[in-house]
Amino acid sequence: MAFGVYPIIKLNWAWRLPFPTCYSATSTRLWQTKLRQFSSDVPQTVPVGREAKAASSVEKAFFQPQVQSLLQNLTGRLTEKVFGRRQVAKIRTSHIRLLTDEELDKARREKLKEVDMVLQMPPVMAERQPCEEVIVEDPRLEEYNSSRHVFVDITYGVKPRKRYMVVRETNGTLRRASWEERDKLNQIYFPISGRSIDFPLVFEDGNLKAALDRGFHHNILDRACIQFEPDDPNFIRICHTVYDSINDNRNFSLLESTRHMGGLIFRIVSIGKPENYLIYLLQKDRMDSVVDLLTLHYIIHPEGAEEFASILSSNDDGGPLAALKHFIKSSGQTQGNLQLAMQAYQEDQRQMQEEERVENRRSAG
Image (cartoon, rainbow, N blue to C red; front, side):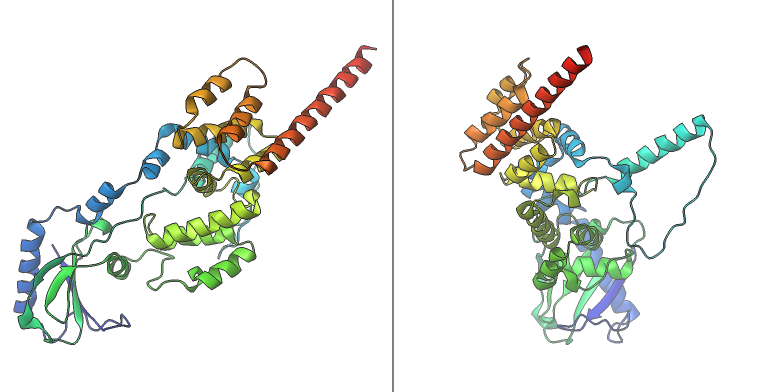
């Protein structure tokens, strides 16, 4: 097991030499021995064990196979948008090839697999719980050094969440590293491309609002996926801010056929605000998606689910509309806009049926 020892300058998180002059080779081996003794008494999953206990029912619902299937259906698979032009550092040149029918079918199948990979949704997880814990307090080391020291297991192949990291405070207290310290130290020893050690300025409230006002919702979410872990409080806050902005302004087309659409839909359904998206789907004449959204709603909020399933399973062609009426009636909230959208949808359907009957008469005559 290999260890890295770093003294940390107070406040500004600047790092000195890897092994400070106040630590001889003997003292460094002693620190490693102490850490091994501590490690042998603690399960390897300490940082993640508490998260499992705190997992919410919403998090568990997200990973249900039926929920995942519904979210994938609602996400959409417009290949023109999935493989559309993006602002990237390197522009890939287009290639034109002559293919046989068999080669063309094979290329299409490969692209469909790539679509599934590109549209893989970031997981929805409960906010991680604090992992700091005092191991020992040693007053004899108080003010021995003006800097804190961190001890990191840098063994190759160990998962970032399972790396042992402890901090010796200037007052002699030895404790487990916090999540923020763990993230920074993991990035120092095992850097992830695109992730910065410091908190990106774009995620500060004022800058984030300015970016959303300019329509950079997709870019913000992509950047957050690189910078943070899915249970990081900052990641959850940023995603919720972006999702709420889209829902409030009904800009759902910004995330359609992207990997973030599932998270957006799950967010608005879990907080009980699917009305704007239902209106959007009705205006787009996507009744199948309306049924999927209502099904998702009653999986997460089971009140009234049995009646909804009974209405939907009827052989009547008006089953989906009846299910939507049931949702409006049972939601217990003001649904004026949704009611008007449903009436407009019914009127459009009647006009289309009338035009179809007229056309059939002309053809018959």
